[in-house]
Image 1 (tube, one colour):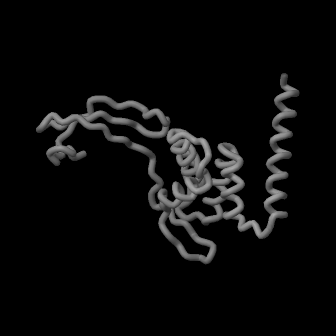
Image 2 (cartoon, one colour):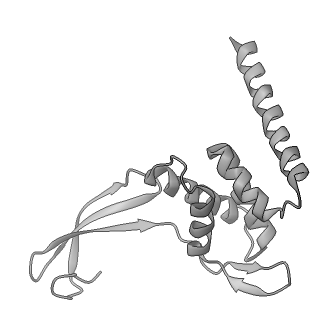
Length: 162
């Protein structure tokens, strides 16, 4: 790791701890030449994952594209930066658990929808309406009804436990 002050690559780690998001490690470092102290973050990265698009084209996995799509779905929704990072990490974890070097864009979309559904149902509907290419209000209505039935079922389960 190079020092941001003097560009020397000789630094030492003073402290390591799990970052507040729980999915990365924060390291406090010090340059051995100039004494400048700085922090770095280490996080899991999906490497060598190829996405097969609907038309058959292939492209490398892009975290930026995932983040962009999630930001659009969650626009004007109340989600903290920390919760957003956790959401991205959960989607990427789901993709890694497939244990494949090539996955379809449909598999990515399904992983996103699974996690969005648990996180924010309005954002889920937004994402699903684009991802599933809802053709009309009726399709939109059917998806909303599914969510409402699931919510009612969860409420009934909780009431039965108590």
